[in-house]
Amino acid sequence: MRKLLALICLAFVAYAQAQTTTTSSTTSSPGTTTSSTSNTSGTVTDYTPGAAIVLDPGTGKPVHFFIGKKVQVLGPDGKVIAETDLKKNAKVRLRLVQEGDRTVVDRIAVEEK
Image (cartoon, rainbow, N blue to C red; front, top):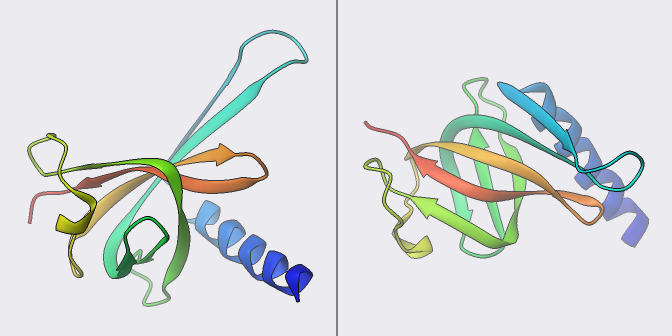
């Protein structure tokens, strides 16, 4: 069961990465630490604070993302807002980072309507 869940998660991440708009990578020193970030955007179709967010990137096919341990939610003015203030149908931009062996959301920026 756990392997099936992992495969489903990988499929969602692979699809989400195909929908990303920007990617950057940095390496701290040769062969030690590599971290990467990517961004994607869409309309929130479902959101569970601290757990998961589902976006429609404009294709009509929802994409699921896991929320990281230290997620930051920013309002349209760029100021930090409470996770619970994020609502369905909001247009957002997500920053995705590697957390262990998973790709998770570490920042949610609400865009102007």
